[in-house]
Length: 375
Image 1 (spheres, rainbow, N blue to C red):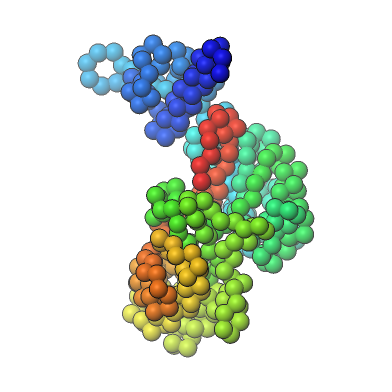
Image 2: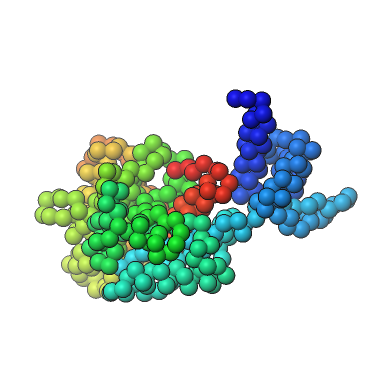
């Protein structure tokens, strides 16, 4: 490396360290930033002046208190980039808009129509952007979480027959054209797993499986800290796994859980309602039978992968709580050699949309600041 290149490279490294620190910690004084990134007072002052001139940071007021002059606060300029996170289900299009700091600017949702799905998708994202005071082309990146998986070779959405308006097109290209900005598509349960890795039960866990019964039916597999997607994007689609008696998804979907509950004298309009009722009334026989069905599918995954942890996510898992987790763990011990713990996923509020938001922010921050994406 030449001498003329070295100071520039060092400045870029220091700038990225400062931006990353401010994104992580929020507004800070120069002295606080200086202490974290290890630069001298003059070097930190020059860095902040340079980033302010480039529009990357802004002054956010003064910190008072104590004796002496009040200190200037600095923060990342949220307006340098904006992202959208979209969670798709057969029933709903759910959108959140945030600036590049992660501050939520707007939320908007609309029913998923039976036809004209792509038009409804664009209109819903556009409405959310308007609520945030933005145009669609102001979005740096959009991440869409959807059931099924996009085949990287064709762009077609597979494993999602319940989204007929989205399956026979090159979906990534189509959505990019519709929105006029960069778009990536990720399996919904993979996004829930990423969120658990970011701020949930899987922080620091290198190998785990997240399983989502009933309303989604699928799993996400993380190996050595990286999501396993497979050649066609279908890794983890446990729904279509074959077990004695047929397709595994038919044993743990919403209708199957309601039917199982009925055999135990529990009348319910959904699997969530059935599980919640059983938990509140102490109907252990139904919960044990359900746990046995869940464990039957998980056993095949655990035998192959031998993960550190299994997480149960989704509304049915949350309704069953730790009781259902303990029952699944006990059933799993009867089926496999590994003694894999089974725990309840921690992220319960919009885990798919939250995961999509973090993924979109990672892409936008790489585009704008050069910060490396992390799995």
